[in-house]
Image 1 (cartoon, rainbow, N blue to C red):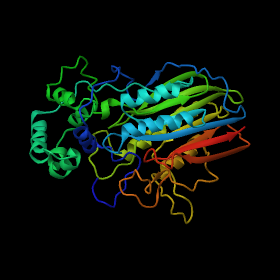
Image 2 (image 1 turned 45 degrees about the vertical axis):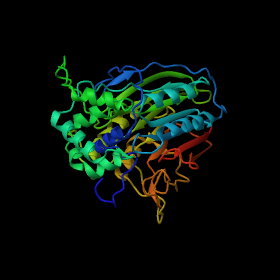
Image 3 (image 1 turned 90 degrees about the horizontal axis):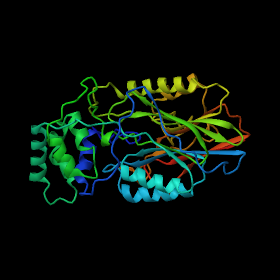
Image 4 (image 1 turned 135 degrees about the vertical axis):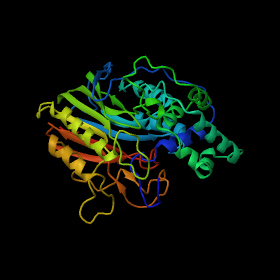
Length: 408
């Protein structure tokens, strides 16, 4: 990021340079994770396998409890990812919810551990497979310059990342999008990634579909967890850069509401002070995602029960005279509500940030923040609804979870 006064929202620091620095800082770990399979092309829909939960009713049949949580498991960006992944799995296992939307569970080992913990009691875990990034590589001059600089200036340093950002900035800034994406594809095997990215890219069998320079192996990082029976599920991908993005849409069976449509998403953040890949500006990208998401929601009957969960990377300010949190692309949030008729579950007590600068996992803790993690709903007429933050003390991520409870 350029300039100390600029504050990124969400995992906005997870850019090309920071991800490569994470790659350089990680110890050598054994490779793991399943083989990749290609998801849909942009703005297409793919049907996922629904794994019906063994649970047949909500915690209270006259209540609906939903949760959204950006876990912030971004290696090299937010500290202690492995320890926090274990703590997050424990916390979610014990938390009361019927449906949860998780974001930023990037690495296969964290996905596996959370899935194992949460499905042990019969819940369903629904997550899209990563986009293929096969065929990306680095030019000889890129790696030669970077490796030479790190070897010259960072040998013996306890943090190669900190050393590289100060001593090898020019080499990092000079990396192509494809090279940065290639090096970040498998953070569990950094030396293997280096060797693979140094090799010439294989000829593509379909030149009309070149690989996209997605970071972190093309991982979406999102998952929908349901303790209610899942009757149908699909994944719709959005136009995006840096990371693939889209929405998980599931239909779950609630004993009172009947068929409940659940949407789980993580929209593109507003990034400042960094080079953007060729797809366009971040604001434009999020705006198009809002349009696509609105269209998907409006395809459902206005009377059909529906909830939208996730880190939307947009939100209003904290109200008149409030200093608790600031707005982030509020025009996008207002348009989403206006176009869909969605309502805020926290409208009566929306006085707290969810991405808070006072969070100890923030790089420079102080006051203020953003409210960009949301629970929105439509087609539900609750007797009462309330929202609260979870996982605040101790902080498990640089975001706090939001849980909403509907009394039906």
